[in-house]
Image (cartoon, rainbow, N blue to C red):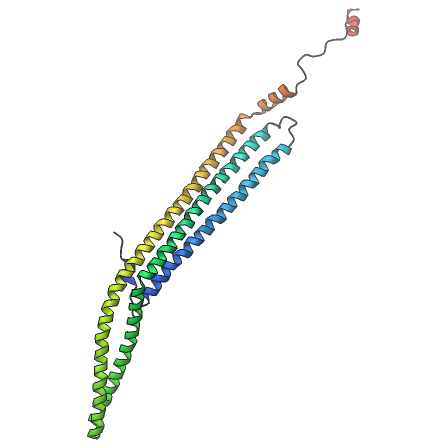
Length: 277
């Protein structure tokens, strides 16, 4: 069961919770864009590395094929080409992820526009309670001032007319304060109901957003992990191939391809005649 994090923690005296939650929703669009840029940059790095590896593999053709070491360059070339392919495959997977993020970003923008329309009533309720809270505070301060003034004049034995005048003002301030209290109660009830619904809506949006981007990050991690496994296999094959190319093998290949024959030169007839004589 998911906790009501937004519902329980975004009230407060100044009623700024709505503004914070609304902008947090908008920050989700920024996060999506930044994640897309990060993966795009990683893709560019992988692509550049793949090109460099391909170039390196081709450079082995310029290495001398003469001598017993010649066949070793074939192993280097094959291994390097495979590494280039691995990184290029990762590039393709990352580009697919970028497309998924772009599509999600478009859906996210539409959802946020719809939500903005849906919570417009809550924004009005927030503005109303902020306004009535200020009015209530002023009415309370005026009520206290007028009542204290009225009591002071009575205690000091001021002229009846002056006391009566102060009493009228105190009564008027009392009625104004009472009206503000009643209005505040109605506005507060409307605000709490709409804010509760909106807080839950914002949390639902944020949960869906986090689930989606975590899925994409999971795909990113899986793609990188897969390629690293493939790279590991390429390195393992390279090690095995190098172990299989023994010194004897290299010498044998060189002898087979460059050998000039096994038959040794015969003795010349002059030497044979001399020995016989």
